[in-house]
Amino acid sequence: MLTLITPRPLLVINGGSDDKTPVEGVQLCAAAAEKAYTAANAADHFRDIIEPNTGHQVTKESGAIALEWFEKWLGS
Image 1 (tube, rainbow, N blue to C red):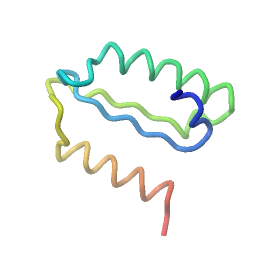
Image 2 (image 1 turned 30 degrees about the horizontal axis):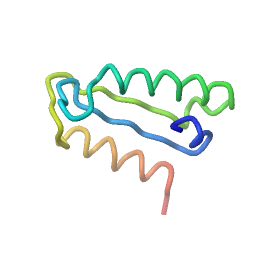
Image 3 (image 1 turned 180 degrees about the vertical axis):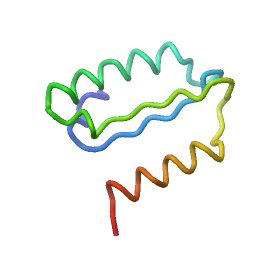
């Protein structure tokens, strides 16, 4: 289902220690999305970030990355 979003912008941020969304599953989905975005010549529309030593939470860093992503793709 994740690949159906292609080529629309997609940012995935996950904690490496998130017990609600295990990193192995996130990495599988991200690999499929990366393949789909690359095939659609839209690799720059997909970004995934795994925050090391972070659980199921929004950190200051991930919040800033998300805001930057929204500004880039939603503009003003």
